[in-house]
Image (cartoon, chains in turn brown, orange):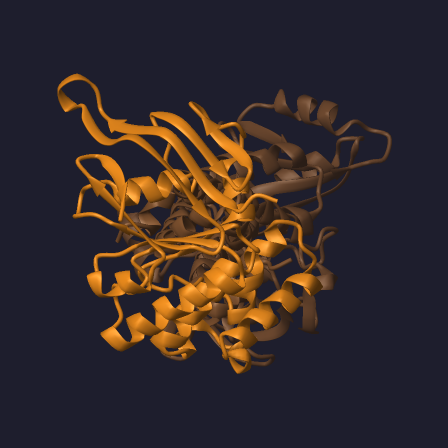
Length: 381
Length: 228
């Protein structure tokens, strides 16, 4: 039995493939948009996962360093350590910086931590070259995406730092590359002032600015203790807020990336809608081009089902081909984006489902045209 | 076995109601036998296409009776739920232009309808090849319609009308787009087909020069059918 869709596509193969490639690029952008969202969610949790701690103690009434400014005293870590249920506690700083690199500035987030402390945020699995920080001063570990190499020198503040390690895939919740410095260096960079400024402050009556401040104290609990109840106990202290890891995750996903993800979701939905309309218009045009033949086929006695089958098969094939091209396209360009794109197979399958539904919906317009085609149009000139 | 190919009795066709009421065909009764080439002649707008479409089970008559072969297909209503099946099995169509399906090659154009009727690929292809040989275009079976000349395409179109072994062929001005010599060639070919394939051919034409080649001339005058 002759397959009309196959023969029609064979007849206009080039046009059909180019059309599928065009729709495929649109679908590829849909996949990229979903990938941007996945990337944001993954980026948002990198730091949280690498710290791998149970509690975040931050300034009272703030959401912590991922969402808003927070300052607490560094010695709070000793107070925490004195609690029976706490296993480890350390002070950490987070600071947005611009690193000078080949006549330009690279936006990074610097994480400061006690090099000799109990908690090291540099995930060994992400360290691809060099080593972790081993001394208190003038060493820096950077993300490979910054472009720095081992032993490169970077001037920060009044000092020169040496790159001793390179990590891969370490980014802040905002998508900036992470760099790691010692807590002392971080405090100096964040809280030290120039001599002129100190003189100015003294003239204003401000003396002894405390540079022993940090952005958060992180802690792990001992086995057998409930993280939530430990957090609840600390929450009774004055001038402090406490978040468990899960709560910080919610802060990150809800407060930090939620709006961005909603925006991306909107764009994705609009793009899927646009793709559906474009597929429908293409099928409508393809059907219009064949109206004379459709009238003749109906006049000769071909059943509607046979002609409708042709339209639906062509639409589905267009959708499937476009989906394949879309996947190829998205995988070709995903690493060209400045921020991380995470392309996941379940997302691709979900898009496949959407494309099939959209194609069936799009074919309705062509099918309606077939049903309404007048067989008498073929006769009588 | 009856020689009757088409029989029409008391056929009426009108359009519209009240003020927009238009009578097109009134009390038409005639019969056409197998092997006959009949010309249907009338001025534009007189209803010849409407009559052709009614015989072809495309247009609904207002009232009357129609037989195709010995089977009554219309008796004030279609006696079958599927008029397309009648068209597929009993009627061949030839149009002003060849109107071949452009995305099917020549042999597929010929086998499409028989295969839809349930004929096996092998049998349909054998019949198609036989017809292509009859029309002396055997070497073109894998060609696309766009690769053939106008005359070759018209022969393929006639072969297609015969591919489903029809009892009747309805031809809508098949020579309208052709020059005199080619028109005569086509009419002679139709005459030969009517005799050799034993089918009735009803052909709408405006060209009086074609009439001498026809067995009967059917005219529509004042909404009624008359034979010359």
